[in-house]
Image (cartoon, rainbow, N blue to C red; front, side, top):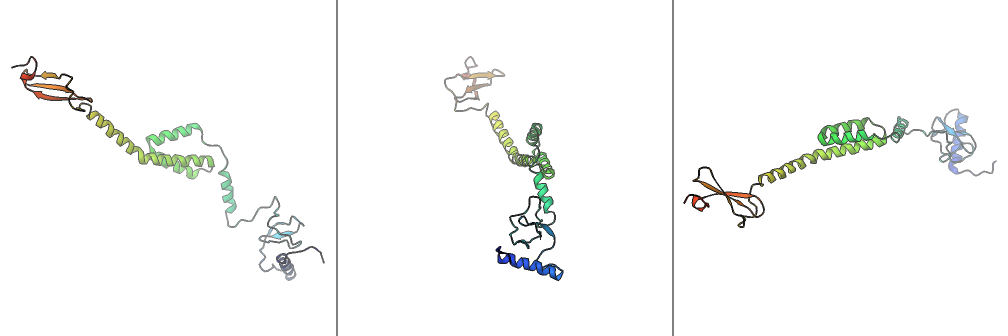
Length: 212
């Protein structure tokens, strides 16, 4: 009898494996399939086995470097490979970034659609981040750009409309200018304190040199 100590769980599992060999079938609760070999004694162990059936050592932390862990579900290995591909590869060049900015400014809706389509097909992580930021920027500009443009048009229109209006009242220190198309009906144009002018009809008698 060996003097090496085994945990009760390891002893039970080893006994279970031994009984399975005697019966000619798998042990109860022991999963089928070869998963690797024990790093301590070299004995093979099955998928899901926690202790070595030969030496009783735990198998959780002694997987050989070449062993591949079993997948929990079909396609997990493929998902891990795809995830690995996303971390590699160069980002887009500067010309791509410039084109994205210009397209977002002039055609934000189309830019948003293109960014989403390209991101769904891209697997390089750096490019996926760029496409995500591009899509967000296009969406923000699409939502606020037209509003800013409308506000700018309103401000410009107000400035143009108010360019000839009187601001601050008539400046009494500046003499008005008079004008008449027939020598009988006159108008006076007054300068205003804060800019602009105002035109009013005046009698001919108030016009210097006008008719009495």
